[in-house]
Image (cartoon, rainbow, N blue to C red; front, side, top):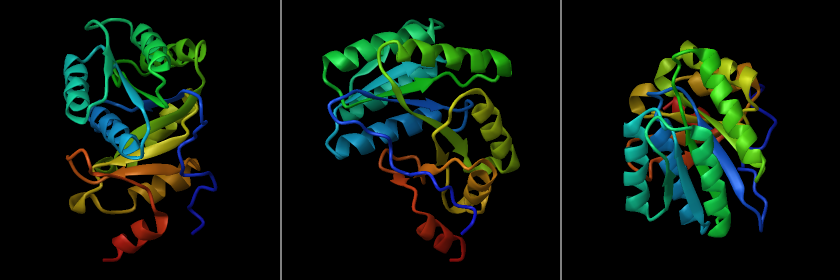
Length: 217
């Protein structure tokens, strides 16, 4: 299995510290839902979580994350519509530390209005967070149905920020195939989670052996 990344699929974690995860990706990939799913997964594993709705340019994303947060019992820090995403992230770090959260998970903007604008925005969010707390993970959400376009997206984000892992979304029966293999082989970045449906529980840590077996069912 030469396509496999040699890097760990486990989330980076430091005990007695705030571990900050940025969830990035273009709009429409399932980024906000994936953020909520990861939060739910970590809560089920006995972690204290704070969520940050830093996709301030899309009101629906903030509302969606707040709805998920209410449903799973996790606080969501949000700002004004079209406000500064970095200021939301900064406030969220402060609140997460005050509440002794193990994890802060930040849903970021996914506009591809201009590629450079999006990347500059992400860079600013990262710098602001790192004034207070190390960024532990940058997880890029890729829609399994996008094929080669997903690989192009991955390379674009990796050039701009230090992506530490992938979340492959929409990997249900209709989207089976080698997209996960191709993305990991092309980039060397490990897949950490897969999303297999719309429900909050439809997220699992990526298991390469099980995935390969499923391709031949």
